[in-house]
Length: 228
Length: 228
DNA sequence: AGATTAGTGACAGCCACTGACAATTGACAA
DNA sequence: TTGTCAATTGTCAGTGGCTGTCACTAATCT
Image (cartoon, rainbow over all chains, first blue to last red; front, top):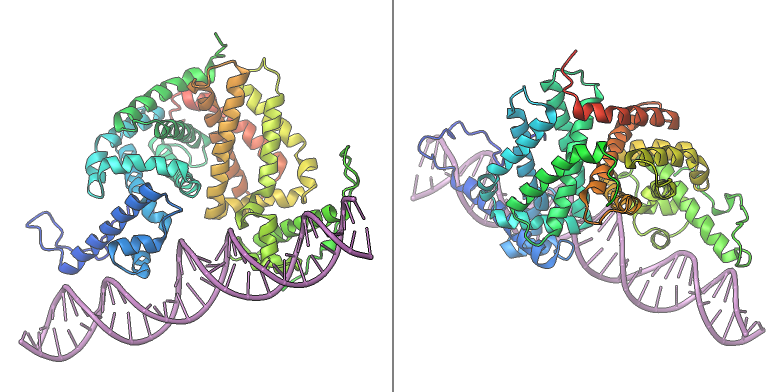
């Protein structure tokens, strides 16, 4: 459960890049159904709201039974967090790929920016990037989705803290990696919230906002910012 | 089915609130029922687990109908977060009471420690402090409860960020209060998690752990903690 | 006391989710 | 082409959280 949830169930040895060996009609159908469910769900969630959309609505929009929906997604919440999960796993990989020389906070920052470089391509496979970005507004304004989002965020932090600890050759019990990662995550969540509350919630705005908040980190903690 | 938590077992303490007349039989009964539901719920949650306990179980343990349970608590989740909410509101009040001269991080830290000073008294009205503290292990190990807990934590952060901004006479748009509070909250959540994973999860241990992690904050962010 | 009001239980119903079973359909070999 | 096997699906029934309604009873008010 630590990594991306690839839809591939059976590991076909044929999947080398060669001549696009037909995935098989069955697999193709499954992929189409899954994608149709995902897209219909996100469309309905953004149009009518998460709570106002029933699983039956989603299934009906695709023309399958409710039971089939639950064979593709473990829960209504999962279909809503599908794209976010993908983005998060890309961030984790980017952290893993950072050279070991960097200071932890620098590495996290660069990994984040870097993961956003390729996010359009990665998410684009699933759904339009614009839809994904706008969906963060739904997440932030829907208690159930926000709660799930925050829980995933802490799981992410745990994983990344382990990576940082390994990078720095520290004892797993050392608190410092967890602290740094938690602080970084805290800033991310603040920016995410501010950003999603804004009207123009595009990637460039998120980038700029996050950069400026990360810059504020040191001064906000050390200085005694007296008013006027 | 175990012990039936009779509603009449409570030791009635006369409220010192001025103004209105005696609590009244009706009010007293309501209060006792609510407390009985709360205690039965927490007992069952810690014994069997949150997911394994149905609302019917809780209602049956107190001898009321399921419908009555939902007249006292909006959801199964609310009864589980009842004590935490109380503790959190005490923390907020402690922050409000800090003298305006202190640096924000200092004020938050002192407010936290101070709110823990009086927490036994405050929570004790509802249930034994020990039960409350042990329940954090249930929260941390139950996805649904953890998610709800984290969402409340962010709401708390918003409120406290507003207080800090007002304290410092800053523009509500200034990002620094939010950053400081988010960082403080991040450390709190890390310590909470580590603490609850430990066997001796008492108040003194939480105090010590939090203090030590807050001390780690500056060095963890500034130094390039190269391995030994 | 009688009238009013509030708390309660019983019942019906919605929605997320799951297990079981049968019908369908693609995959593959003969 | 056809028959067999396994995967996919729909239907049905059931559980649990949660809500609306309604009648009944007990507490408060006049």
